[in-house]
Length: 294
Image 1 (cartoon, rainbow, N blue to C red):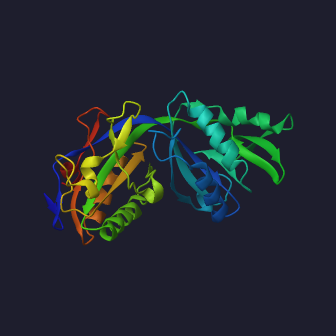
Image 2 (cartoon, rainbow, N blue to C red; image 1 turned 180 degrees about the vertical axis):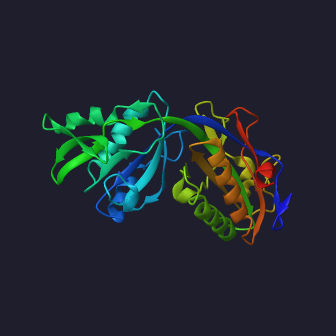
Image 3 (cartoon, rainbow, N blue to C red; image 1 turned 120 degrees about the horizontal axis):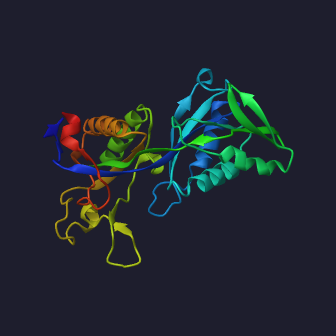
């Protein structure tokens, strides 16, 4: 199959199910909502080494938030066992400390974690409860006023690791294609692209020649060593970039992949689009590229 002259390889992206929490951060204006969100999702590109996989999903206008202030939605992905600690750490260190910030649940799930209730102890006995937009909130006195956080935050199961790989003639065209892809993916509600700017320049494969490494460079997609790697996939290719997508459902991730691939294929210099799969060793959710585009 070709899309705008770009070959779409007959392969699939291998993704997997996992747990996420989806929270809304509001603040006095969009600037401070985004600052708090940016801090909270730091060091969250991949569960290979980061304690969580995180990302900013998008902004909400003041008329769409419980307290009538601009908001920013983020996702935090971690094991179910570690999620409470992860949320408390990121909220406590990065959002509680951000001027005018407040935290609301944005996860459509019956399963809740008592994150706000546990965070009340920071109030050192001066904490209280209140209601905002019909939601039960914990109020913690801080130097700027009161920090408000919803008593319980939801946790749900979604799909992580949806991906596609852009092969281009040079770095300029690869980066432009990746940027165009991320731009349209941002318009799909319920998904994040956790890598820097939504783009991964150092994709990995499962395992390594070194026993202490659980993942290593995806050598078959490294152009500078194409003549040294057996079965290299990038001979004649100048640059490769990967887009990784996590989302609240298989359908959302699939839609984001579809829109991202179509946008990338519009860019001059893109030669081929493929995806990362590992023969079923990574995950059981498979996104077949050609089927997504049919």
